Amino acid sequence: MRLDINGTVVVPEGDAKIIQFVLEDQDSGDPLEVSTFDINWKLQDTRTREDILSLDDDGISVIFTDDSEGLIQIKLNTNSTNGLKKTDYREVLQITDDSGDRTTWVGDSTFILTEDG
Image (cartoon, one colour):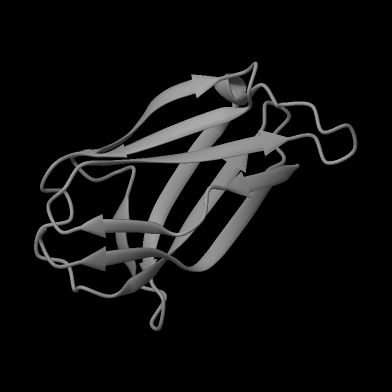
């Protein structure tokens, strides 16, 4: 599997944000059927690796998958980042396919939380 991350995500505190990931077959480049995958996403403190947000938290959810594009969209609802430290974080995306194989991607400093706009 190959993952395309659409650059660094910059989010003003308290704003809603949709984060996109595109998954492709590493050999053929074809989009993967992401609707069959178990998707796990979390945000971690870049320095301590402490989990800050995840799909288990209120206001964070997978809102859209598209097999024809291999697209996953995760939404952070308004106010889901309130009270977090204004700094850079790392995103962790973990996919388990329908045969039970797990793949994890870790992006360092790929998510930056800024002051409220």
